Structure formats: structure tokens, C-alpha cells
Length: 163
Image (cartoon, rainbow, N blue to C red; front, side, top):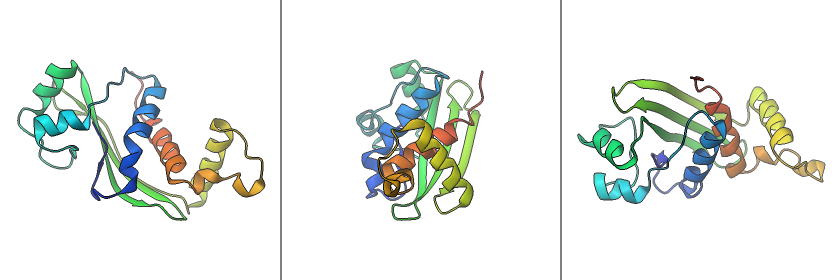
């Protein structure tokens, strides 16, 4: 599903769909098929749906008919701070389309000012990105909302159960 943000004017919506889609696809746990905001607008009257609100009655059937999916992943951004220290709150739910049961859920706020997050983000940057030329840019994942979002997505998706 398209990423939902309680702040519909959030800049995070310009890149969050792409980032979360790519990071879940990299996990290799299942085939990922994006549901477009156009599909949501056409069928549900809204471009983005939150898993925390009531879903349309025909939601599961329409997703199954259109995509032949077994499950649907909702990602809600419930808070974000795009300035240092960066912070992103994510509520995600993976729902079985046949039973409507949650297969996985997470509700975390990742704070770039927390020592353990700083350490993990720096390890992520060293393992995932080209090393910075300058020491001043070596921890850019903690300065860029887009890179920080990638780090958060990868970290959260690592908690998905392996089937």
C-alpha cells in the first residue's frame, strides 16, 4: 500500500513509497507488488489508507481481485522530525488477505539522537554506502531524511518473520 502519513503535507511522502518498497523487496521474503495511490483513489476514494482506521468493506476483495496477493503491508508514518536529530515513527502491519489476521506488526519511533541508533546507523552506512571522502560527511545517514528513512526501513524489515 502507499505509505500513509498523518501529516498529508509531509515531504516524506515524496520519497517514502519508493524507499519502503525497495527495502521490503530487498528482504527477499516474498514478491512485492506495489498498490498505487491511483488504484486507492479510484477504488477507495483516498490516495492513501491507514491501517489504524476502518478499511472499506470491499478492501480485501478488491486487492485480491486486482493483484492476486496473499497479504497487504500497511506503513503509517506517525511522526517525523526532518532536522537533527532526525526521528521517524513507523507503524507497519502485514495482514493476511484471506483471514484478515496480522502476520507481523511493528510500532517504533527511531530517534537519531539515541546512542544505539547512532551506532547502528553508522554501521549501516559503512556497510551499505560508499565511504565518504570527508570525515565531516561520514555519518550523512544521520543528516539526510531520505537516507535515514532507508536505514529505518531496513532495520524494521529485518524483524519480519522468515517463513
